[in-house]
Image (cartoon, rainbow, N blue to C red; front, side, top):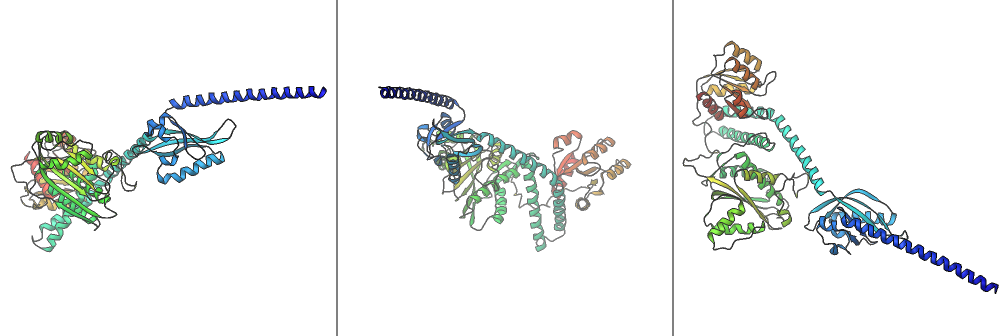
Length: 568
């Protein structure tokens, strides 16, 4: 009996213990369910991506933020590997990180990772992840949080680029004065040498080549200042064909022999009212981009210009419909003349009328649709960091729009890229001479007035004296602004005109001009500068200065400025 009693007691004790274990398990399971419910409740409404991976790296859960931020459907993600949503070059590195967290119980916090959006673009995240444990404390995978920082990084990059551009602008302004003085000496002495050589001599031809290179250097400085927003646009009637031919001459020297240049440019095509420096910048940018697309295998760079009239039926409308379709614009059925014209004009965002169409076509690598959609966005670039800032095409787009024109692009991977630029064509009854072909010394205005010429660079003073004496003027020169003011005080009526540099030690040209006009208010003054940040034509006129001349000074420009000021 005693043994039976003992057995009953043991059985009862074991049953009670079992009941307690069951109760404990139920409590634990309830706690797990509550925890899972809380996790799901929080993650489903979280703005950041929350995900879990199993021991093999397969997704077992992603919250709605995944679909909102990355565009992939949640149900499509479950059961796939993390590697399916990262760049190929990142896959191995991310796998090693996953294995360390899974196998060594490591925790990763505040790391920057990138994932692929559904459209193929890159999204950046701040990532935190750790081992995922079950109720028994066993690792069953990885749980992580991804905070989207794509827009934040874009803003940071834009800020850095803005600061870089500001620094470039400051640097441009700082070096322009000295560079223009050097360039002024080169151009000035070249002009003087040309005047003393025979028209058909070999020396004359060589000097004219030097002069042409100097003009290109001057235009390059203007482009730098324009890019850094330190010069204002000046529009005048220009032949697009002349600018294109000049740009191609510069490009030919820098492009590899594997790239063939073909041009369909006729000099008798119309003119546009534009800033020639800006249009030159557009051409150089489009052509260098085309060359970059052909740098590995070579190819053909084709540039063409043709007249177009929008508002009437034109065969080119049909040709351009392909580009319209690639850019997301539905092609219009052929045979409907007015509708096609109207639709095409609306697509281009321009007014009806005569236009010049500039085409830049390459046979390079082309662009996929996702890149094509973004090429005009500021700071967007497919080039390496050392090869581009992403500003080029956005600047091109801005220049074309500011001139009342439009730009379109068509491209396919492996089949090259074509840009079409449309600029309003203007008609002029008088024949416009080609700027490159016109003789720079034919018909230069002359005079006999007395001029005080002031510049702190002795070489520029010597050039100024010889140029102006060649034009017939009586010259007095000074290399000191203080000395020039003292001389002017002694004989204020001894001069008909003062030409002074802006940047000089002790007293700037602006202050010198003000001091002279206090002595003699009617004295005509031309202020010369290579960097116009501190003074513009408007502020110069407000002071009383008659003309603001940009350095380096060229004989014809200087002669015409003098006659205009003295004529006024």
